[in-house]
Length: 99
Image 1 (cartoon, one colour):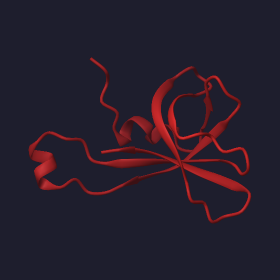
Image 2 (tube, one colour; image 1 turned 90 degrees about the horizontal axis):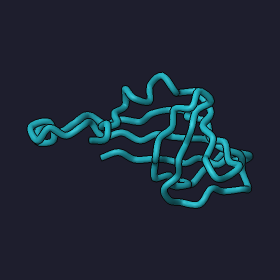
Image 3 (cartoon, one colour; image 1 turned 180 degrees about the horizontal axis):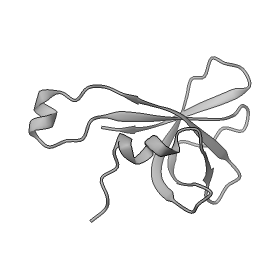
């Protein structure tokens, strides 16, 4: 059975750079956004929802979809990554959502 990923899985990796396998993109995990878990979610045994927010350079946008993101130590995650509107010039933000 696959490990259930939680915010705590990613907390130690905030500020670290992930390399996208089969590509040249490098994305830094800049923050983790969470919302409180609803009581009905808790009763169903669901994890608290969260979003990973990554930052990369502007211009060369990584296509939305499943990607393997790997840390320098070899730890990797299969994540669905989506580019998001980024109002700051010179960077492109991405998110990976966990409901």
